[in-house]
Length: 475
Ligand SMILES: Cc1cc2nc3c(=O)[nH]c(=O)nc-3n(C[C@H](O)[C@H](O)[C@H](O)COP(=O)(O)OP(=O)(O)OC[C@H]3O[C@@H](n4cnc5c(N)ncnc54)[C@H](O)[C@@H]3O)c2cc1C
Image (cartoon, rainbow, N blue to C red; front, side, top):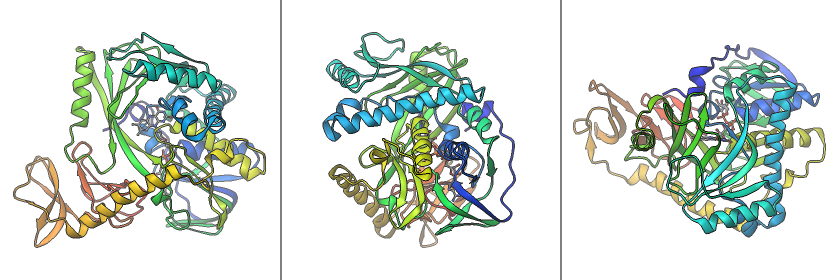
């Protein structure tokens, strides 16, 4: 399952780190957040290297839908009510300034990445909600309006439009920026200690360490594993769809996302908490939707991705912890990581350079609110049940009762194991306990992966690590 971005852009391989080096800043992770942060630091005169466990853009960034927008759902009205007009205004302005920074940077560096300026829309069946949102957005200074009619064939009462947003090809963009940076690929950071970063093949001594690893993998200090959960969703790229002008997303958990890339119409949806997709059928549901909208469509690609959601729906950008003043973090982008990565890059650059950044406090990981506490309690419940399942859940399936192309937790040789049986009846057995904090993993039939319901790590049917916060395979 390869995204349309990976199919249409191959990045040149970089060498791994060898030996010991010293620099001013080291960024861990070469996704959109890491590459943009390294680029902004280098531009500000800070010598920076990037360490990437796999390939540049090879994490969630290669599987995004790459809308660059400050319209993060119907959030303006909700944010004003929950956080007040000042914070809501700063949040939207920070993200709109990220859209502008993309435009500036792409022009200045002459990056060919199929960048297109367009409008973004959030549709809903609830006209009152849409009008309320359009008014709230205008109140915050956004060029927003209510549109009664939109071009996509969904059942709705219209949409809220944000003007001057954009879309692009994320890998073409990141590849061009990475060409200007020192990036070591296939270099997984095992440990960070004060100003030292340790990998299997070498070490980096740096004044500043930036964790741009999608999910911060150092549990203590920071305890980000208590403060976020992950959600996965699925995407189809189809030909013979519709030539869309704008970018669209619906309001609510079952909504769909639409955008155009060249001849492809991208349709996304099927969102669920990672580790919570036992029944599967997410791609099938998207295909049914695509066939309903565009009966002549032809599928060109399908893929999925996941993102971290913080308790108060604002990313964590800033100092990792008060006990590590030279460590920094960028995470919790709630599926809006294109602008959030740019916001991260600008805030982290300014903090590190000692410059004023008026948005830094809004995103500071040091904040804490009653809203976050409630979510921590909810997420904590999920983690406790994931852990308890490991000890108390008695599986009903056995290897023999498992149908081909199915995976499940089974009883095997008097013990519990995770088993996937292929179409050819080949059995792949793993110890399905997450190598992060020990929760029982659940089978995801759409991706054919073992997923952690506690913090969202994913492993393939052989136990190979696909996504963190875990950093090690399972056996
Ligand atoms: C289905 C879907 C659609 C989306 N669409 C949009 C959209 O249209 N617009 C938008 O704004 N956002 C969107 N998002 C969100 C966006 O894709 C992500 O927020 C963004 O790509 C995250 O970038 P990142 O750099 O934080 O993470 P990643 O791209 O995952 O980068 C992190 C990197 O860190 C590396 N790493 C991890 N651990 C280590 C280690 N120990 N040592 C070295 N390297 C390490 C990983 O290998 C990885 O390459 C979407 C998300 C989903 C799920």
